Length: 141
Image 1: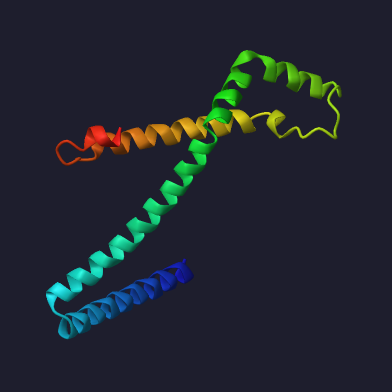
Image 2: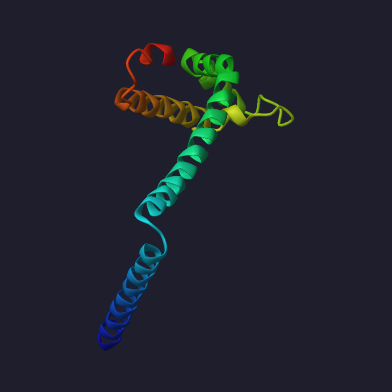
């Protein structure tokens, strides 16, 4: 118990020291740069993170759009009952091991499609919360 108390005291002291360093660093920045410069630097940092996220999202959306027909085909394959028949045939050893059978992994296809639908739902939520400038929402659709 004494060791835990000693550790808690050390961590508390370390946190206080880090907080003091942050405050010291903030004071040094405020002394060196104007409020406008600090705002620009802070918002530039936010912009860079947003830009990376937007660029990554657009690349991902491009990849999804290129797979649009495959999404529909795989969804139909799963829903048609053919997947279940093929899975059972594979379990009985009727499908050669030379054939790629990635799609027969018990939950892989279902989970991938569910992840996709979850992503669509998140995108829908984002779009619903975006305050489009007047007249631009219809252009985004």
